[in-house]
Length: 215
Image (cartoon, rainbow, N blue to C red; front, side, top):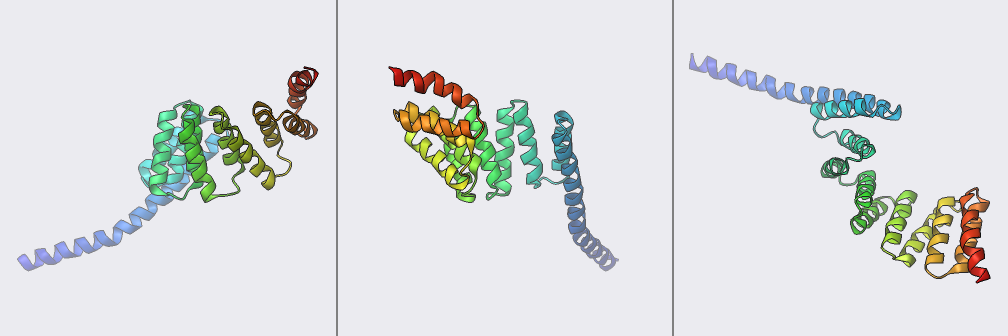
């Protein structure tokens, strides 16, 4: 009798061992489908429903870093910066090489005026993806806030090496150079930004470059 019980127990354990991986795979597939639904809702601007989908996807698979990532992006739109931070931290716990999570966490820190922390996260983004134009741009903005003008100028210059007609980089570098005392170089950058279609660059030229020249 005892032998039969032991054999039955062993049989049930074997069944459980076989079933668990299949259950995990099913959970991952369901979670993926739910995440895709959330991403669609996110793209349509239906943000509250998107968060509900991402919550469900995480319940289905607690290692679904994409669901955490997009939930973080959605929370950012509601200015829930601390909630977004937690989600990006979780993403990086699961997948430390996901560059976009560092970038978005940097944006959270920037919005919280943690400029040094933001610079560090943008730097991590660039380590993982050295052509990440937005990371250079945002790092330049953070360095501007800290009045680290030359470092910020260098970030803009790097962008223009990657993307020679990046109008935002010309505009920001123009402003940075002017604030750094490089009037002529800055005004030429603003002129290039205007040439590429940024009309507010010409307003800056009128308001700053021409007036300073007249002085």
